[in-house]
Each structure stands twice: as structure tokens, then as C-alpha cells.
Image (cartoon, rainbow, N blue to C red; front, side):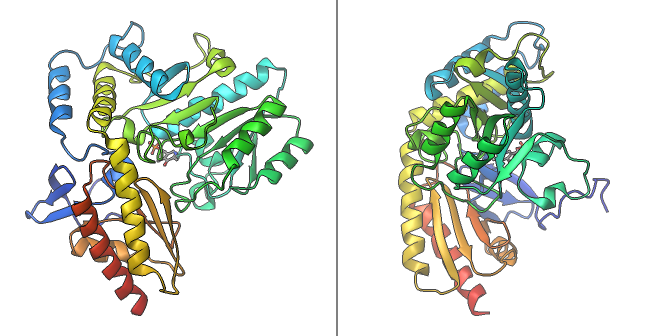
Length: 390
Ligand SMILES: *Cc1c(COP(=O)(O)O)cnc(C)c1O
């Protein structure tokens, strides 16, 4: 028995090293990684450019605190603003914290407009994190159960239902913002219907609400664009980021534009570690490599290739409900719970995930090549067929 708190049911493997899309366990067995540390290691494992930049920064300066100016933080904010079209950034250390910042920003925005009990519209099947505010915002009873009392100030509607959002607005005059994942991750790799984000933007404009997009999982190149909202042609007011941003060095960000960018004043929000020189070096280098190595195009092409290969291999199987996603965010929905597939894949040296009980989820490194993607599809298609026959 270990001395760890019993928060995870872990798979029976310990990894010792990684390179690109490959990991090795302590016995030297090799695994093809189609999960990338849950959408974190976009550059693959131990990308030489990242390793060099981090080693150099560790030997120069790791942390100083936000009591002082941090050059790398200002550079990173400027780079993220240029890529996203947003105005400014607040840095923290995780996805949950990025969403906490967004939730606090929305509440403060509401108070500024004399709304004393501000409400944020959130979605069914959403996931925003494990802190009290973000688990309240999440549309999953399993992450909430036992942690009551939950927070007030959230109204929940089904994902992909614009009419339901409009109805909340009609009945609740305290609404200040919508918080939504453009592509839902944990909830089953759910894809927005045509014009969904445009419709949300329109409702926000009509009502003076902030459109806040949780891009913690789908952002930073995963969808085949820098940010998933860039597939829709709209601009949000707030974006939250984390997973892929630092390639495994903890960093989260809350970006804001226009009125939303002016909400926080000194004293409203802070983080001790947030945006320190080491974390910002990881993020700056991650963004640099994604650009230089054309990883957006790679994510788009390899993702499309994998979905079409899966469709060719699995089409016609009545228990395969849908193959969906965008870029290197891939979901295969089956008609029955399929968590056992994860262990079977592990035995055959392939790392995958199952979410929402019935959805096989792949989040491969953005550097995955076609030949490696083919191996993923070959192994997984065979496993799914065997599983469905059994
Ligand atoms: C993972 C995730 C979070 C939470 O991120 P943490 O870093 O674990 O706090 C929030 N939102 C989405 C969409 C996520 O996928």
C-alpha cells in the first residue's frame, strides 16, 4: 500500500521515460501514446527544444512572484493575445483555476452592472474542474456528489440547445455570462452543431452577457486551429486554457477581451505561482514549436485521417454509434460501457481513454505522424471488434 490518498483508480503501469509519441515502462516495454497525458503533451514527450529551453530557464531563474514584473509572462500574454485576438491574460496553474478566474470575473462584471446575485449559464455533460465553483459548474453529478452544499449562481441547460439558453434569459434577469466548452471533452467528445457558438454569441450580444469558452482541453492546437472557437468565426469575451499550454509544466490562463479585459483591478485576484518564469518558458516554447513544426496542419490532417480510417474499419458494426471529433480530439461512441478497453489496449502497448462510460477518447500528441496513427487505428479497431463480439 502506498501513502497516497485514494483519489485515483490507476492502471497497473509506471512509466520510466518518454520520447515523442512513445513511452517506456520500468520493465522496458514500449507503449504508443494516444492520450498525451490527457491532452497535455502536445509536442510529444521530451521534445528536444522544450527540454533545452526548460533546462536553460531552470539554471537562470525559476520563480520570483507576481510582486515584481516578469518578462516572460508579458511575452506570453502578448503571444496569446496575438494568436487569439483577445486583449489580456491572467496566469494560474491549472484548468480549474483558469475557470475560477473566469467565474470570478463574470461575477465581478455582474456586480459592476448592479446585478447582486449574478448567474452563469452552464451546460449538461460539461466539465470545468474539481474546485468547489468549477465542480458546481460541471454538468456531472458524479463530480458533485458528496460535496454539497454546492455554490449558487449557476443555471444549467442542455449542450447544443440555443432555445434553452434563450429561455433562461427570459426568466432570469441575473444572467451575466455563459460558460461552455466549444467541444466537450470529459462529457464524451461532443461536437457543437452548426451555428451553435454563433447563436450563443448572438444571445450574449443581445443581453449584455459574457461568452466564456472553456478551451482547457480543446485549445492550443488540438482542434487543428490554435483555439477551437476559430472554427466558428466568432470572438468570445473570455477563454480559459491549461492542459496543452505548458506541455506538462503546470500553467493555466484566463484570457479576456474588451469590457471583460477591464474587470479585474489590483487586489481582485492573484496566484502565487501563476505565470512564473519556468511555466511561461514552457508555454512560450510550446507555442513556438507548434508554429514552427506546422502542428496545427498536422493535427487537422492526422485527425481527419484517423476518423476516416476508423469509419472504414468500424462502419457497419451496429454497436458503434458514432465516430466524431475535430482535429486530434477523437471520440468513438459505443452502445455499451467500454471501460475495459483501456486495460486491453494497455496490454497491447496502446494508451487510450474511455470517458462518459461509452466513449473511447483519443487525444494523441499533436506531433503524431500518419504511420503511428495507423498503428493506433489498427490496434484499437481490432480491440473494439473483439470487445463487441465478446
Ligand atoms: C481538464 C479540464 C479542466 C480541469 O483542468 P485541471 O487542470 O485538472 O484543473 C477544466 N475544463 C476542461 C474542459 C478540462 O478538460
